[in-house]
Image (cartoon, rainbow, N blue to C red; front, side, top):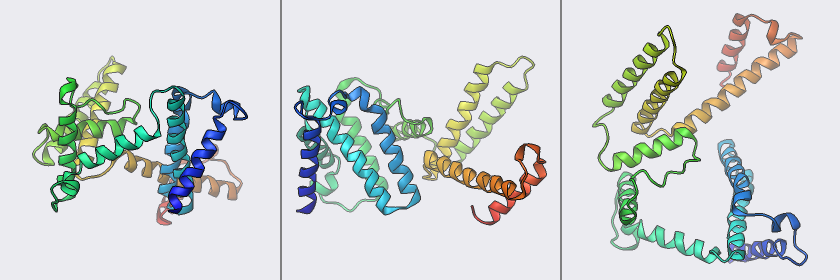
Length: 263
């Protein structure tokens, strides 16, 4: 099988780089801690490639992510804590355990039921650890994504609104509270920040109800803003002007042009 052959070749390259005799001195110095930024960076670059829809670029970036997994496995094997076989065994048994409708009792269930079962099994696995239901959500996740995961875990336990009217009403309430805080003569920045955070949390709840990924939605809007702002900059460059000396109405006109061009 070609994939297996190529995987073995990749392992050989990694072992060569981490060989104390003739290996790479930089690679040999790496630890789980020192490799953290590279794992995060490669993951983000993969997401960018997926957003761009470039298949060749996606394959390249996934290769970088795969290598990070292999690198960590070799570092662990060197420290005699775990190895690549342990990683593969762990994820294989977890997938089988959390897909009983496929590997045990064959059932045709909806994607929503699959997720409910997954979360229920996951909670049951951690029952003896005396941890919170919300435990396991990485603290290093982007805040929007972290909020969504907290809400989904809580909802799986029944702590959820019965319909979308609840989250919509909550959003209005949080906006009122933030507005009241802003209108105070002596503003408390911590209180303002807290109330604004409540607005964002309520928005994430609304996104969850409509099955919208808030992190991806905001990233999409960020890319859109970048494209349209770049268009405005280019128009000023063509005219030999600078944005600093331009009126807001001119910038608004260029923004509307960018919007019409679906940028």
